[in-house]
Length: 228
Image 1 (tube, helix red, strand yellow):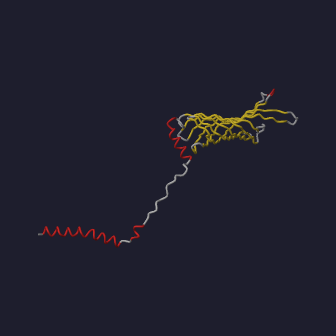
Image 2 (tube, rainbow, N blue to C red):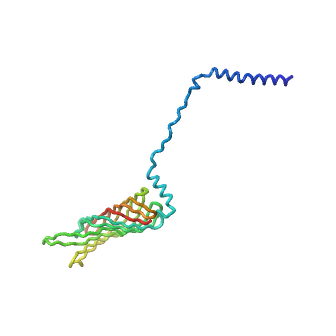
C-alpha cells in the first residue's frame, strides 16, 4: 500500500513538471528571444616592429658565430683635422682611418684595441711668397668598447696615447716635428649590409688629442668592413 502511494506521487510529479515548464514559458518575456549578441570585429594585426623582427632574426643566427668571439673592423673615409693653438699648420682635409681588433664580452658589447687617426697634405704660403707643403698625420692607439644600442646601430668610445707628426716635403723632407700626448676617440655606425659574419657599415668617427702646446681634433665619415 505504501509502495503504491509512492509510485502515484512520483507519477504526478513527472506529469506536473512539463506543465509547469510550459507555464513558465508562457510567462516569459517574448522579447528575450530577440536579444542579439553583437560579435566583436575581426582582429587585424598591425605592421610588425622592425627592431623586434631584426632582433629575432639575429637571435636565430647567434649559434653561427654572429657577435661572438673575436672581431676585426677596418674603416676608411674622408677626414678633417683642426689644430688649436698649435704652432705647426695642423688644419686641413684629407683621409681618416681606423683599424680595430676586439672580442665580444657579450652579444652586444665588443671590447676593442684600436689604431685610428687622420692624414692630409697641407699647402701654405709663407711671408716671402713661397709655397710650401707639409704632410701631417695624427694617430691614436686606444682601448675602448663598442656596443649595439639597436640591432643594426652601434656607438663606441676609447682612450689612449696620441701622436702628431708634421713632415716637410722635397729637399726639406727630413724636417719633421713630432708630438706626443693623450687622446680619445668616439664613433657611431649603422650596418647597411650583412652577409653571415661580414658586415658593411656607414661610420662616423671623431678624435681629439691634447699636447703640451695645443689641441688637435679630427673626424671623418666613411665605410667600415667588419668580420665577426
